[in-house]
Image (cartoon, rainbow, N blue to C red):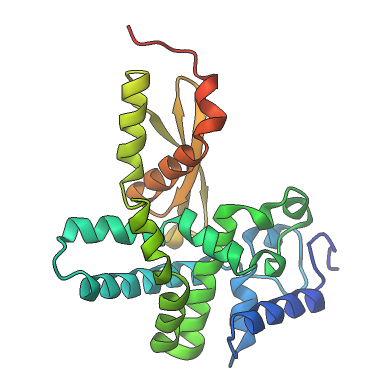
Length: 252
């Protein structure tokens, strides 16, 4: 027997996904790919009515497609820049914070199916969930309509954030920026710690916190040490106003 402990009924959920696709001007060939892209893993613990997979595999695929498209675009746009400079700019474009802002502006939140508990906690509005859903939609679009359509979507919605990133120097490595800040003010380096693992063994992601003298500065998620540290450092920098006054420490 199905447990009704999720945000939407199946019909309501599919309707919300269609509204999202209409707003994105996506005409699906296989709409089930896009509904799957909007299923958060929390649903699997709360529903038995046809939900046997989350969007994590599509997110994995979309992440790879996104990185390839952005890499190619930057390669052609900036022939004078070195590999290191291009890598930093690419990281800023595909980073969770940037993707979350894009997904929020595109109004992804109403289409994300989550458990009732996660909905009450507003996880459908969580930046990590928004960013991951955007990557999953890219993965679905790639499978449904192939590379050129997915590429056009990425260029239109993600690559167009490049001027803002360059203007505000958002391509500066967040881990290095956080370390410079903490060393300058408190004379110490922040600590990174894995606190959770999600996903299957072949597609595992890690939740990590970054802290300073017992105070959590931020947390992030990623499939590799570099990605999760960058994500958590960026999250910490964005929340600086929340934690800097909590650190009781002075340089000796």
